[in-house]
Length: 317
Image (cartoon, rainbow, N blue to C red; front, top):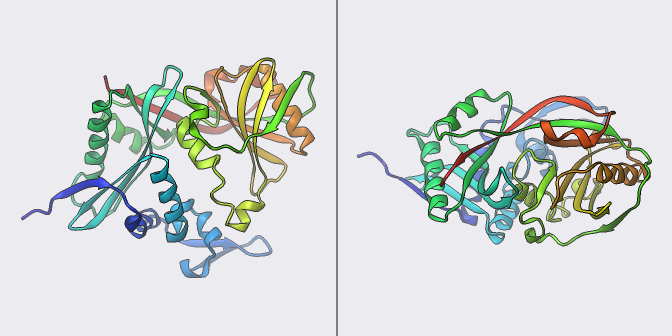
């Protein structure tokens, strides 16, 4: 008799099984020594942070439990598929509202399946999410896919998902600029602040997913992460309000990734303010990720990276 696939909400008791799913595809575990040389080591020889660098919080049970607890507390949809009490797949999905063309949507943030799954587990998880979203009158299902990942794009095409946004990555110099602006710290991580706002930079995934991954300070118990400069700010420039997260790059401390939420589309005056503030903070290079047809406010000194991400979508109404 064929074992029955069961889809259910994830619980903290699933943490070890979920981390096993995420760790399974990693062929080797490495770290840099004091001289910058790559060392091949066993998993057990690495610190929690060194494991983190291979793929984030799901690389260890310790950080996986913290992350799963955070998602469950924040109302993120987290589900697993199991066969005979064994977890075979995991999906997390973020419900949010952004201006059109995204609208009210649910975004697939993570989807991973065991290599030895014997039935179309991944397809059934996605269909389960679609059925649930339709019952909640959610307008669209979205997912972020690398421009080079043709296999994943082909998989989502089975659900009639097609490119909605094409995201590029761009760098501009941090430099002094003319204009009045105000910057204050913003430590409140309530996602209601960004409800209905544009994610004007950092749009590799959905607005809500990026917020949950970046704004809460849940990783300050890891010394190496706490040491990294991360600024959480409210910035106002020429009438445009924005919440900005500036994250120093690990291997290039004079460069920073910019994530920015605003009720208005990106404007030149906001970019000028961000560049001026960043220059005063001793940064020299700022990296933005945004739709390829929205880069004009970045100015004439913009340089494009060989990077492309697609936000795929399908209508659920």
